[in-house]
Length: 178
Image (cartoon, rainbow, N blue to C red; front, side, top):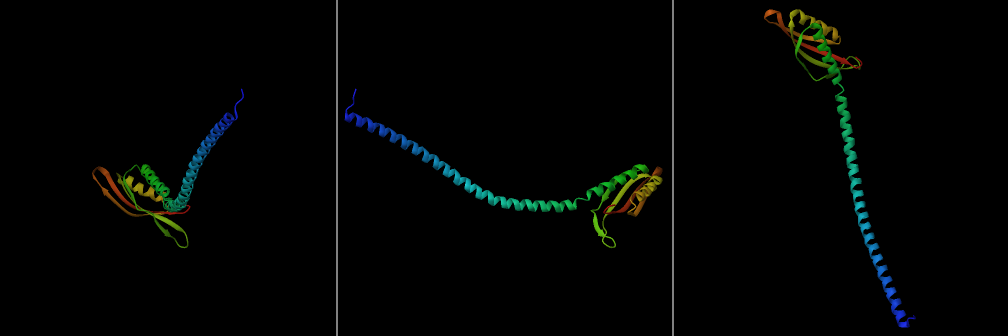
């Protein structure tokens, strides 16, 4: 069957309209996708600028925190000296057969000996109980343990039945490398 010219024109026009509607629909969806991508790209650029600015601030804060930490590290390298001193005191007490009641220490004081030799000094107060002989032995053991220290004061209170209490003031000097 052969179509008339009018029918061919109507059919051709229908196909053309259908194609045009399809093209417009695809174009519209592409424009919408492009708009979404453009708004996403704008948001990402804004985030990039914001986070780049924050990065500089955060880097500055990190550098300051690291600097503060290194200063604190310098201050807190001393606890090992204090732990070693305390261990030596308790070892001397064990060897002397006395009971330590209390130990207190001042913060280390930094000093310089003749020349450029730097040292830290710890003021330590020890209270212990035992017999008079055991307490005198403690003094001897502390003198042996701390050859770079000085016993500043000793007070012995004798109680009944041979028991006594000692309060001992000690300064220990810690030289670098000692």
